Length: 455
Image 1 (cartoon, helix red, strand yellow):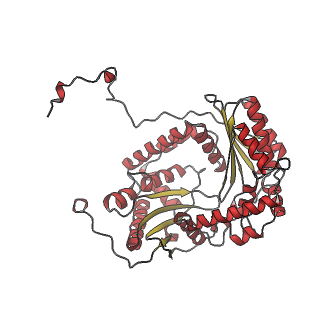
Image 2: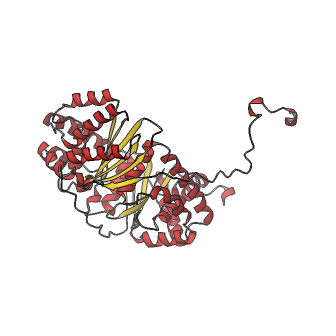
Image 3: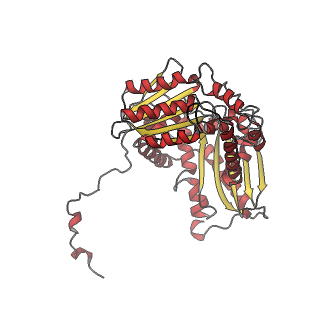
């Protein structure tokens, strides 16, 4: 063996300094200045000036998600997907050609509580003006052409079928149907084949005139423009939209009983979701404690669930825990896959670990590790315009103050083991736990014995 002490250091490292003494756990503090205002039309706006790149990122979010479908399943989704299929002035092909000519990127997203559409384009005066005009035309004056509607219906039916056949989304659908029985949240996929088929172009026009109104809108902007330019952009958009309507508040979620269900499918492994109702809201002071506790339980390689189910027992490749703070009643959900014969045993293990966390709370060491992870995620997100505009849109939807990004790290630092335990016990209802599983139905077995070194 060569004596390493006799080898001279490579020249390329000669000028490097020692990393000793550097605290890698300390992240740069977020100092993003968010400007917020409300237009005369009732539109809520959040804006960050970012002149490092000649780009503008814009997200518009309407309270027009699938939970406001009412008796017309698929209404919200089909309306949103038809917006970029032509306007009163341009057919679908012409609209796509103009978008491509400007180099603009458009994207859409439909969720239970909102419909979001985004625009990314260069910030040069000519390109930005044309891109915003085209985006405004799409939002305010869609054609809802009957022929295009036939095509989009076929696409939406195929998309929904593929989602339903995918184990994670099928499991979520089964879970929500039980956890939110009788509530608009009970159908997270948002569309049925019969509902889509029954909708007409006039149904979409009527819904658009209500839900896509200026006072039902939140706008988030990050980019290379001034406050005056941002105000003019939003005013142009809001002025063109329908006026004077906003979606009614959803009814509160009625309490449901604990339940456990298995849905047989051909899949060899089982996909499981375990969830409990969560009353905490992002605008509440103790919500960061819930986020940290969920991270301790099941977010990242060092979380309790990953250590127990993957590292020690080899039951799954991945398991995650995520709080979803829906406005009418949120949920804390845990999802994983496992071999079919360990379905019930793994469910009991996960339920027990959740109960232990609620009863005992996390340790200070676990909280510190999760604080580092969440702070790092935040710093990485605000470092890009696309990540930052997503955070602005999410914060606006959740009713968080404009300075939330600046204060969030301090809020995480203020969480103690005691306050985390109190938040868990205050906001989670373990008596209403719901579990669903999908996959082959095999005789159940106890968990395999732990390796000798882990006993």
